[in-house]
Structures are given as structure tokens and as C-alpha cells.
Amino acid sequence: MSPDYFAFYGLPETFRPDESALKRLYYAKSRETHPDFHATSSPENQAEMLRQATLNTDAYRTLADSDQRMAYLLRQHGLLDEGKQEQLPPDFLMDMMDLNEQLMDLETEPDAAAQTKVATEVTALADTLDAGIQPVLVGYEGLPTDHRPAALQQICTYYLKKRYLLRIQQQVATFAARS
Image 1 (cartoon, rainbow, N blue to C red):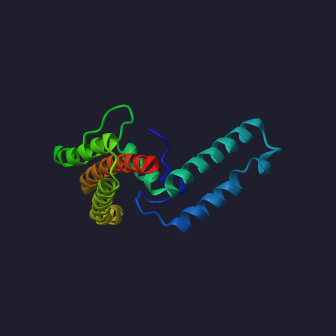
Image 2: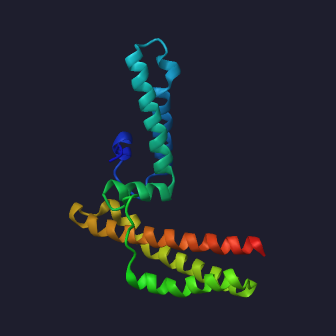
Image 3: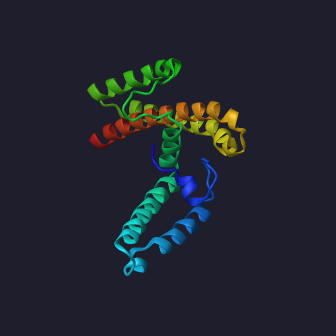
């Protein structure tokens, strides 16, 4: 398990951190751990400050980006394991079969109108997905601890669907670039 970036900054675990507070904490830690301020200290202290500075940079980069933050939180709770194939809901996969068939058709027979149709459909699905998860993301921090696992499961499903749709969008963009 990676370090607890929220604890490092003294922030509550949330999908919607206060971005200006996060930035202030990052800069404060940067000043505190910058190697130049510890050049005359012991080699052990210098090594520790370098470790803290690296941790600060990693924590900020992860928490400042909404996608990285979501993946980080899901991994912290054991819901995303990079080594194993996560399961998408069967109904979602069935819905995606039609899109995948349309993509295969585009591969063999490029068609600008069909390409636009797929792109519009994928964007609409992504927008619907985003709108549906917003209340869960916003309300997560205020949930009682025993309700969080269910919310995290919903967020994980959202994340996996979103990644799937992103791959389709990238394929459509590749077809567009070829034409």
C-alpha cells in the first residue's frame, strides 16, 4: 500500500479536496523539506528531507489530479489492483458490444458520419456517467464509515466504465486522424 497522502497533508480523505488548501500545504511542505535548507545538517537528516520532498511531490501530483486521485483512493481501499482484470458489469459490456461492432466497421470501412455518430454516443454515455457519480463523490466525505464501502464500489464501477469509454474515444480519435 502506498503512503497515505491525505494524512501526510492532514486532510480528510475525499474525492473533492479544497484545491487551494492542497496547493498551500504543498508549498509549505516544499519550503520545509527543500534540500537547500538542510545542506548543513547530518547526512541522515538530508536523506530524510529528500524522502519527504519526494513524498510531497508525489502526494501533490496525485491529489491535484482528479483521475489520479480517484485511482489512488480506490487502490488504497483495495478496489483497484493493477495486476488483475477488474470486472465491468455484464449489462455495461452488453451495451458496449454495439459500440465495439461499430468501431470494427469503421476500421474496415471508414465513414465520417458513422464516426461522428459513435463519438457523439460515447460522449453522451460519458456525460451521463459523470452526472450520475457526482452526488457520490461530493457526499463521500460526509458518509458514515460503514456506508463508505458501498460508495467506493459505485465509484470503482464508474472509474472502470469511464476508462473503457476513454479507450473507445481514443480509437475514434485515431480513426478521425486517419481520414
